[in-house]
Length: 222
Image (tube, rainbow, N blue to C red; front, side, top):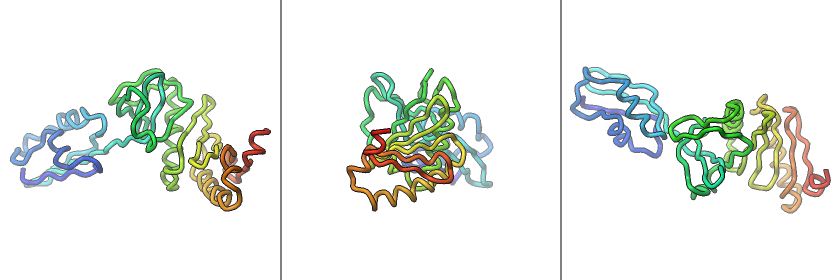
């Protein structure tokens, strides 16, 4: 083997991943064991094996998915750090040092949490809804504007924006459209209302057709 190509990583070096996988320059292509490589790669909870292909006569292509921390659940005296699919990456003994870069996930009833496995939620549909909301926000370029996602036992979601607005998304349908409506209204709000009227206000886009904004004074009286 004269060439090793690794794709799918952003914070790892390709050489680090190939070393974890146990693939080395000089190895024989005839002795490649995909199951062994998969097991070795996924021993690191931040990596997911996808595919290993042999490029005859001299190289291999290893495709992986790097699981990146995006959210945390405050659990008693610890914090469960998750990727966007609800996969447990690590357990921190307190609020994570990178909490300002992560979204707090609230409302999910956790039964088990083991590093390297999917979060054990009492109802997995809650985790699925979180993933769908996160992906809709990500596609809309709004992840950096959100501090918290709450998923209720009734499978509805709301988010807390950096600006202090709480947005009700409702159920998991039409999330892309709801996020689009939210984004448009938030832009109007920021141009129309003073900061004190925005902090503590609410926006309901659960219909998927329009939004109902309640400034802080109105929201507190309802």
